[in-house]
Length: 169
Image (cartoon, rainbow, N blue to C red; front, side, top):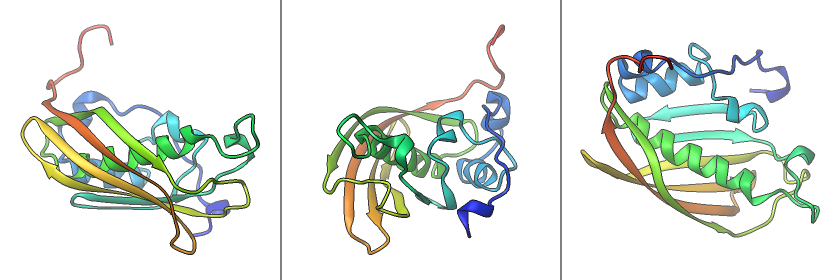
């Protein structure tokens, strides 16, 4: 897929009752297919070539000048956002309907810096264990030549979603 010719993306937040009604894999696939809105956080990341399988999520993006820090390279927050998203969504693909998650903690290791000349990068999240109350996952960012740029691990809290949104939200 050519990321420059991708269709316009609808950004927003899926209503809680819609998310709660879907198995995690179905939810992530619907979001990737544009049937549900993409998270507003992804407006500057602009992922493309997104795939979701049970326990595994991958997508590509291209670091750009808008991701730079004051020292002239891509800010570590860019990689952190990619890895947190990939690992969290990998966990989400393993959850049944009515179940949600949130990141409790994650650890990231930066291996090689990125610039706008790095080109397309691949972010992949993979579950390690998904239980009733906690889930763990790992993530990797690699460049087009397969070189490791960053990797991470996460622990997520798993919880039951309310059937409807709270009043006033």
